[in-house]
Length: 197
Image 1 (cartoon, helix red, strand yellow):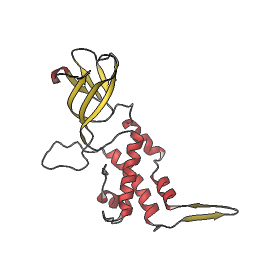
Image 2 (cartoon, one colour):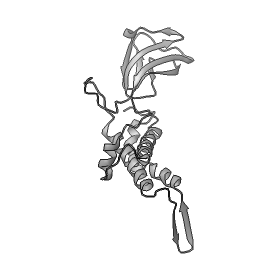
Image 3 (cartoon, helix red, strand yellow):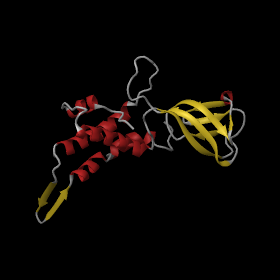
Image 4 (cartoon, helix red, strand yellow):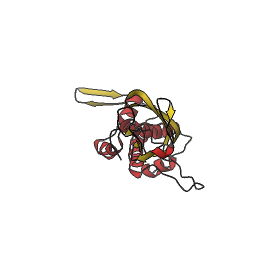
């Protein structure tokens, strides 16, 4: 899945000019976005007509996995499509107005579009862009990766402190640089699966 932050963003936050032809830039942008996706359990980017299977629990609502819900294409219960006029969307839930979703394993199949637009589309005018706090956390992670890996040119970094020494490979450094810091996790907590943004 393509990054929801770009080279202009990374240039601005690092204070240097980066290009999309640079492999380190691509690695940093991907790493920053994947760190956010992994922590939140969300795809973030817009996905059209994604299909999810859910267990019916005898309730009027089913919580979908991805946010924000943009459009419901269809909801099937035990292989039968429900009419759109008996459904409503509220936050992360699809709700039935006419009855409950019957109890069953994998008996509810929802096809829906979800996520944020990563690039504004001037022609549509109805863009729902990735929230600034999600973008900032991804950029901070990408910046750490870019600075850690970009300055090394494939080198191995080591340090000796008295009788103690350690060595980090470029892969170790990139991995640790992409890890989210506690304040960043606090920002993302609102978007995690199980939370209702």
